[in-house]
Length: 143
Image 1 (tube, helix red, strand yellow):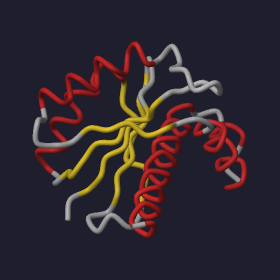
Image 2 (spheres, rainbow, N blue to C red):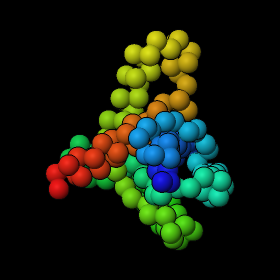
Image 3 (cartoon, rainbow, N blue to C red):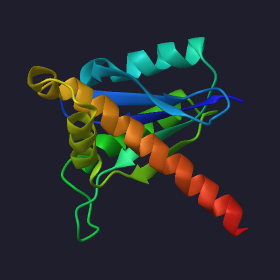
Image 4 (cartoon, helix red, strand yellow):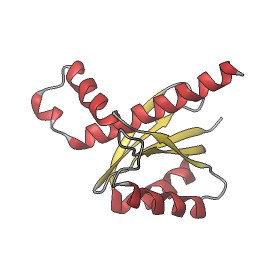
């Protein structure tokens, strides 16, 4: 089996998470400058088998796209052209930043480390990926 790569796309920084090869566990991969994201992903998929890419879908509470969607959509279209054999799909990312902050607080990490925005982005990507994996499992059990 190949990995699933998740992306919490941001204006300046982007958090990345990935599954293990059996797609059982989601874990943080890294945070990269968004300007270098495409190169990072292209390099990563050369080194690791990736089955699909999941991108956080930024929606507001009323279900309308957030302002970041105008940056994410061109990125997704570019990924689909550059990596035509790897499906790229969206997954709702509402509340992931809040959940990431809560996870950091619950972990007991010191005050200075909690201010690390890169850590929040990486954890947000992990939450997106975990949520995606859980929704897939639920769909399989409903069949």
